[in-house]
Length: 191
Image (cartoon, rainbow, N blue to C red; front, side, top):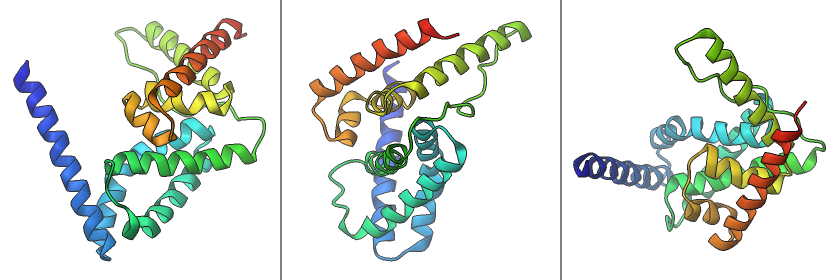
């Protein structure tokens, strides 16, 4: 068990080191290095943008804008945090700008497919549950939706989410508690 964990963390460290090298090269104008960063991180950035904005078209725009911001900011990126954490922050801020411009929020209808199970009936039930949760998340206030998406759907640690949102961990825990309570309320009230 310890060997698997050791391999996983060694692999994560290598990815972080590789990201740092790619950022350093891209900051010096290496377009191939920047392209490698884009290929590696765009799926994650798109998921976050989609779950915050609610539509594929807006998520694509947010990701594109986030990469433009990242490209411009590369020379000033101090690498005090992981590259992925920095990119989460860039895409989250971009998605928040889009959401703040629009009211009301649009339901998430394209986020993820159903979890496959052994029977078609089970797949339908699971798909309906996933859709209900995603619709309920989309109805949450953006201040509750964002930390919930980053922590529960993206699986980031409390510290990473707090850094992205530029709040302390205790404040984040409080926001997440309120978001979970609101999500449960939404799920109970669903038609």
